[in-house]
Length: 161
Image 1 (spheres, rainbow, N blue to C red):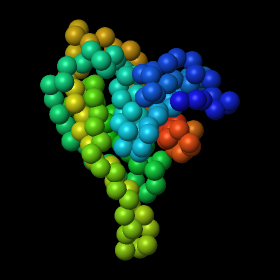
Image 2: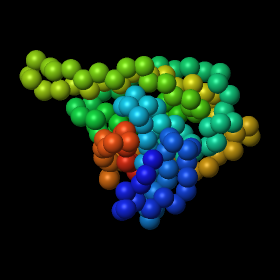
Image 3: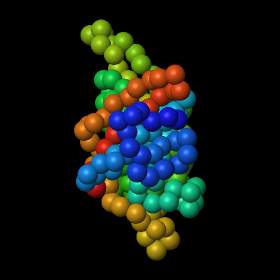
């Protein structure tokens, strides 16, 4: 996907899924998707690829993940945060992420509720088996945005390392 003129790709991620953008201290990512489900899958994969080589992870464990938000950005934030919590609470590193559903519903208060449901497929992280890259401390709202253009969807987000 083409990058905006204001973006400077400093390192290619997984082609067609995400790239790393220039940022002074943290990891700045743009994830791509032809639809919202693919966008959330690729954003989750980018999170784990920042921590290890996801292609080398065995696909031994499946964990269901459900996240809720009040708009697409808050949903992305919670989704990434829930995936990161899975890593820190159960030491599971995801090499594959499948999003099954993304729902937007109107609540009784006439507001919108956003939900994403999917699964994380991977293995317990063992640094003697899988090479660590960086430690992601947190997902941030800083510079987070989701846009749709003629090529599909893009999600921008920063990971605190």
